[in-house]
Length: 329
Image (cartoon, rainbow, N blue to C red; front, side, top):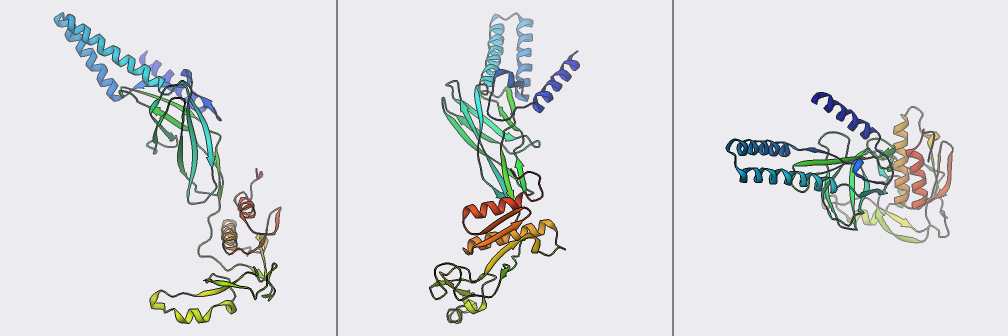
């Protein structure tokens, strides 16, 4: 009978784990589960031994101490469950990352019962022993945690189930619950390394692009792949000794780009793997933005005219991250 009861409890927990609701949720008593820890089981054995000793020797004070100890354990169980119940869980902000880095998900824990919550441990329920974070939630307040997850491949990375657990105050019982947040992070392709020269079309123009011409000298900066050789600052290069850490430098003009820069997926060599081509275009987008070179962008059914800036960069990287997927939303 005991074995059958444990099997029913196990099936119930697995069912509730699969049915963990998404979005913002309130942890009610029905969503919080509790079981004794190893320390709790040892404590139970101690209480049984105390009861046997008090019965064997007919000790009134022994019975009183035994029942008082058992009541403390029951009170600990109630407090452990209440430390989780009544918490409101909500998703926070996310930011795009590049493949191979770590995605970060914000999780907000909010108290709704005017009671301070102590030592609530939160972690992604991805594998046993996953790193978790402990937090205290003030009464009528909230706490924001940031959970990290490796971003291995481009595309949307959805947050897995989150496990919430507490053993406060005495550690005799473990209360826990699951939550599936509606959070996702956009993962951009990893930039190609080493970088290839930018695909600049046409010959260099003395007028440049923009309102200011090439004659408006703006200063000297470090050489970057794709810079015209005639823009190298030879006088400054001659003054720098390689033994002193000298490097190539180039002249910078306010006239902007001196040729048309077009990033077209179809113009890349067809023998390259799709992911390699996406990585190359990612590197070109970042380099063009770093150098403030206006660039047009073409991939699939996306065609963005020449531009530069955060919005243009985000649109291009989003198209690269979701290339090949049915829905770009």
